[in-house]
Length: 254
Image 1 (cartoon, one colour):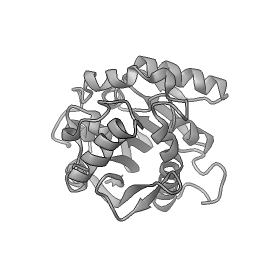
Image 2 (image 1 turned 90 degrees about the vertical axis):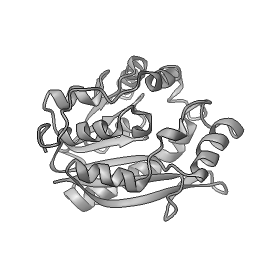
Image 3 (image 1 turned 60 degrees about the vertical axis):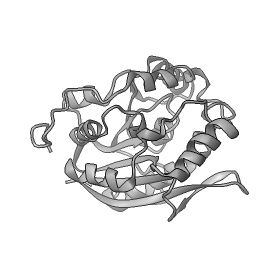
Image 4 (image 1 turned 180 degrees about the vertical axis):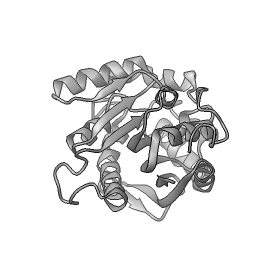
């Protein structure tokens, strides 16, 4: 789907500067597993497993048990932050481009990748820059990003422009329910202190049905949606039929 076919040119910015500022403030602490992004550290193994599974099922990215199943695959990590997800994708063999409008986050990402001897193309830009340049990728990730954008529909349009036909888009976000407000905002930010207060605005959360409609409107075919739940007994996250709080969704670009 070209910019003209999508019905909305991908020349604007879906980025909300106030949301970017929240992550600028904690960029230097992102790689601390006990720091302000510790929920993402705990969530990362589940996210990596899901992305790997969806890519293998839909794109045939090498043997499922391969140490580098993404060899030869181009991947864009949108809203990459300091690289918590980009680095594992690079270790799995992907040619990774990580973009984030937060300059501090990109600086932290570059420094950590250099210390880890990883080659990742990090850029302090938004997805619209990739779209305007006509760049396309085999896999596009937008994990915990859409709830921080100012225009979700424009954001999806821009994601469509950078996903090659037949390519895979994987997203994760929070559902807009009473339960997500109580657990994702009140508990996570104010009671448990998992995230800095004000990280999330519940009004920006996106229901799975709405996200699926936006994806279909922009030329994607949704192939999987799964809930994500926290397990207090083990301190980790697991997939679930329960999508009331967190969920992941994968879609193929037609």
